Length: 524
Image 1 (cartoon, rainbow, N blue to C red):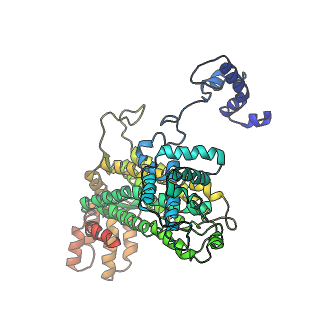
Image 2: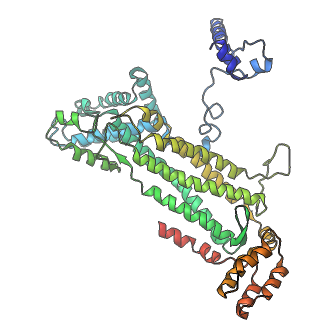
Image 3: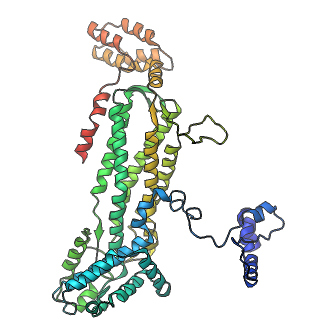
């Protein structure tokens, strides 16, 4: 960078960038002397800056990847929480899925009578292929990556490695050129991504179900626990704690059910979606029917109208469902954070945990905060994927390829968030006393039922009279009872109002909370 560029950089970045050429020379000199110093750090060379800025945090050049050196927290700090997703969304997972699709396509070709050059495979040949798939390992994927360093093409590297392995079997050696036959790379990729999404969703949804079940369980346990509602942050008609959890459980269950309804699409239609190459070689084969049979044999839904790529609309639908589920969890996180802050919940302490580095008394709602932050990261990724993937210039551009490599990231952050929310829920202790005290301090919320009963009995200006009595004022039990006693209404109605308290003015909240499991079952 020139001096103007360096001047515009932060005090952290500028000396590091300026140091690189000199540091490289220093490293080469050290290497020539046989220096074995580890780790190596770039030597800062900006004498006008403080030593701490120029040297203390100069980057090391040879750190090996570990949970401490990973750039993404998904592979570092939170690696153990998302380990289940590595087999679904990693580079190894993508290579393995490609190998599966290539082998299954070769087997499909061998089943088509018109393709006489690929006769039906013997039991021994099929078993060889099945063994190859079942034994495929990260070491095999590493071999593919090694070939890719020469080809500079990831799918072609898969093809070459497969051919190399199949050459060891006499029968399969005769049909090597039918590996990747008539395929464009996207034929292999789109099916691979669909298989990866299927396995990834299968890994994540049990955690989503656990969140739904836990929230519904709290709804039933706390069905009759009266609680002040708040609209616009102000005291409003009371509810029950269980009913508020039931609201969330139902919303979550509905979005969770939508995920199961999103079909995972696939295509096998060649370079621009018209089976051009297929028909040039075997014009008598019904290639669209063959492609549909093949795609559905993988457990996917056939996409009949495509360009070079499957249009990815279903991915946007799927990511949208997960995002909406996440938004509801985030809404729950924030509400619980707020309820904790006003004392409606206590949090069970965990031996050895520290809430603050300077305030020993603190028990912070960190699990809900962690969940909220990770849900934001997840939805940011899903939002970009949903907006970007359905858009491709003309019959295809490559922008989807690099983006799809990150599709597991949204699921990773989601998975961390679900675990954090579940942990936070497990530590909650309902403070019914605090809720009761809050209700008892807000008798003015009974203005609503009193004016509603007054309307029934045609009392003039009921709303206005209650507004004059309660708006912006505190009214206690005796004040409300005194007002009711002056009303010219039937005695049975007056008696009901006299017996009413904020804690009993909860409508059918208890019944709704207790009915949540039946309502969720109806959704499913």
